[in-house]
Amino acid sequence: MLAFLIRRISQSAVVLLVMSVLVFVGVFYIGNPIDILIAPDATPAEYARAVKELGLDKPLWEQYFVFLKGALQGDFGKSFVYNEPALQVILARLPATLELAFTAMFMAVLVGIPLGMVAGIQSDNWIGRNIMRFSILGFSLPTFWVGLMLIILFSVQLNWLPSGGRGETVDILGFPVSFLSWEGFSHLILPAMNLALFKMSLAIRLSRAGVQENLQMDYVKFARAKGLSNTRIIGLHVMKNIMIPVVTVLGMELGNLIAFAVVTETIFAWPGMGKLVIDSIGVLDRPIIVAYLLITVTMFIIINLVVDILYSILDPRVRLGQER
Image (cartoon, rainbow, N blue to C red; front, side):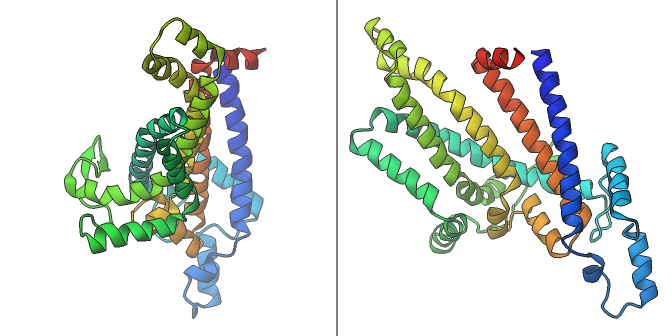
């Protein structure tokens, strides 16, 4: 297991280094932030001074190595707009995005896997067919449209839930969270539902396919021949086997939820990282954009590593196969 972890961490470090080069060069060629940040009537001397203060007078390779040296020490540079460390600005928004993403994934797993198992067991009757119709809707409807419909229904028509913002937060270990107060939780429900719908549909389809495949296998027939009840067979043996692909795919999707909740955060004015990076792209705030993208890549790498570890625990043959 130790060799497996060392190899995976080494691979992750190489991936992170390559991504840092690609991200830095890509953001460099998007445009010149000075053209946006400085006043149009600035004199050439003021323009040159601004370029020098932001470190943009150096060649690209030198800017990258200055950035890399700082990044290895946890310093991604200062935001051009906020004049604060980029990492500090992003981390201030991170708890809101994490809270939204984990709540959405919790809702998707809590509802999606049981519905998918029911759809797999009851695939020939109206219950299974209606669950699958719901999953098709979840895949097909655009996120922004669903978000707007949720606001119109629950906020405008019924006046049950707020349409935007994060509401009241409570600090836990220094991190603000919304779900511990009703006022904050009421702000969390709609964006989490909007974000969870696609993942819920994915969990339904994965679970249904896994149940149908496993119900045809010999170990299920053998268990039935031994007299085990359907509840025990499905709840214990079948569920354990279908969780391997479900954990793998949903683990990857959790990274997508954290990194790409931009649309939902924008519609519901949720103060997370997605909204921050969209605002930063508009003003070419390079340190924020680069730091956000590298943090996103790091999160994907960590999630992949955790998924691989869970996968190897659920099925030790995976770890042994890679060690040969």
